Image (cartoon, rainbow, N blue to C red; front, side, top):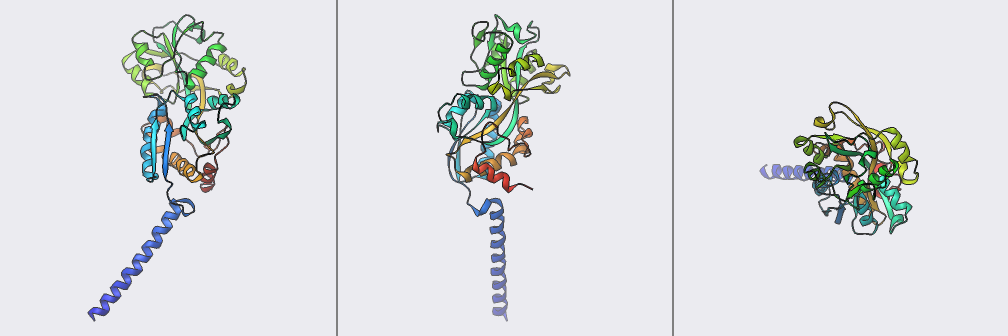
Length: 332
């Protein structure tokens, strides 16, 4: 009797184990599209300047990717911003990056090395142009920057592109009518606070922590970028069609705006790779970016704005085949 029960117990255990294996297999099939194993390999993700939104987003995405793709190794690489990011990915120095659509359109227009290989994965969040001055400054519009020391972003940044274009739209020569200071968001706030700058341009998600922290210790103001200036900016054609009128919400920087929204320019960001990147890797990367929106968004507010309904619109870049696979897999 004992042996019969033991045999019965063993049979049930084996049956239970087999059933568990089937369930696990189904779960893996669900999690890993088409039953593929988690992608493996080494990736470089070019981000941005320290304390900028690209870098903060990249740091948090790196942690999520490590869980979602345990067989892949992700390395972050700081950069000057969009322009340098695009060049790195296009020429094979990095595998993924974030860049603004105006910078991408400029790279494509100029037919720079590897431009034809660039592919989009996700339309992310919008950058908002922020022209920051001391609260008691006499600078009320872009044309008032004549003769001033102005932080214009580093040479390889997207900030530099839009700052130069805005000043030209306002009738200024961005080289001769101001004293341009090629600095990033990691140093410009301190320079303004110490009187080494009269103003600085920044283009980033809201709120940008470096600007918020500056407002906590120093009285600043955001210079409005009004519709007539934006119309003049867009009139240049080409990549400037990716700029649009927007407003910074009244609560973007509570200590700065006095409850008032501030008109400005916005431009979209795109997650970028190339046609060299494996489709399975790109699909998994895209999936993690979409799925981590809320968890990353708790710390980097801009990430909350990633929207599956608009993520597929990566103009001016065509979608990578791996990203297409992801969007097809989640299509209702």
